[in-house]
Image 1 (tube, rainbow, N blue to C red):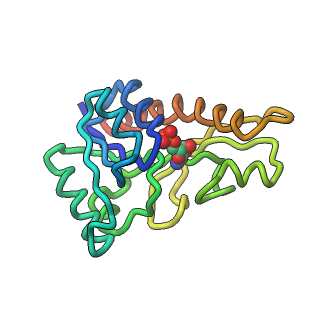
Image 2: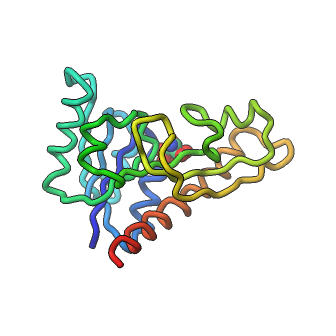
Image 3: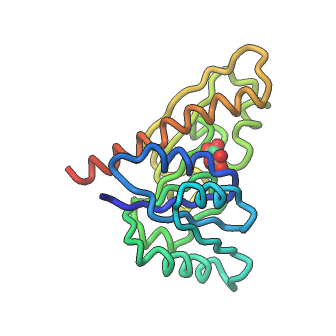
Length: 187
Ligand code: GRF
């Protein structure tokens, strides 16, 4: 069974969906970048090992990422799924897992990259937004697109409604795509 790692910074609802909808893979480990991340509470409940690695404890991004790589090594993970991980990957991580780090973004890239994508969509009064899964490169949400799913914004919907609608799509799409990528790779 292919092993993957998930990186998260916050709530971790995508992490949980990835764990509970695994078929071609197993989530071997969760990395969180600060100790208040609720994702780690989910990891305890789901019995997934997790590690808190806080960047401020390291002199450089390189050293921070090297510590993550040191943690990952015994887990023998083939893929890394970023799920609400609020950091740009540096060369240490990118070179260790070439074309095997993916991310989920709550908009139809290349529209609304970066932070607050849902807020950006609302501000622009778009009628359709959605979810993108893409390979991670050194930019902000710029890597090659793997999959997208649209979300039609209901007339008069508030931010909370839109967020819930987008997250429902994410929770289905992300595990499906990870399962698909891993099955394709092993064929
Ligand atoms: C998701 O909307 C994801 O697209 C974005 O950050 C959010 C994380 O949510 N990158 P959660 O922590 O998985 O609940």
